[in-house]
Length: 202
Image (cartoon, rainbow, N blue to C red; front, side, top):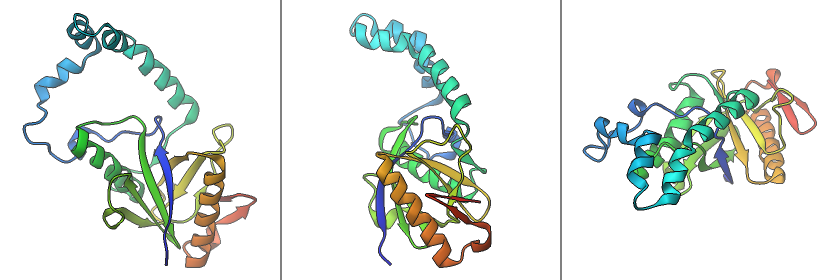
């Protein structure tokens, strides 16, 4: 069965995996360097050479406060532990960024592939054959007012789910339709999925 691919992002309000869950980097990044990531140290070190970078470091606490408010409003971007189906897929994307850039990005761009009753997730530069995959149970209904046209919550048989954000509302509608059709065709929890317009309810 052919896979339909979508360019999406893991939203910034989703959980980032802890460093201990990510692949080891050898000598590229030591724990003592974490102090240099503190916004005040970055401001002082960047001030003589790059005032713009220093200003960016200085407003970092404001950005984090805003992100905290966004997370309160948007709710979680994933449910389930890091060993769940949703957790494994999120880890696969963040591990690719960590291995390439030593970066735990707030909003990780990735690709989601849907083929029948299964879904695959990979970073954009990772080959399709290396994508992490799992069976899915359709689309989780996002509670109002957190539901937006670009947000898609993908459910999994173990009860976990993860949120992806499509680039365009039309792509999100098509992704929802494929997930609902795939879960119904595969018979994955078919009695628990009820289709209502563009969304299904788990």
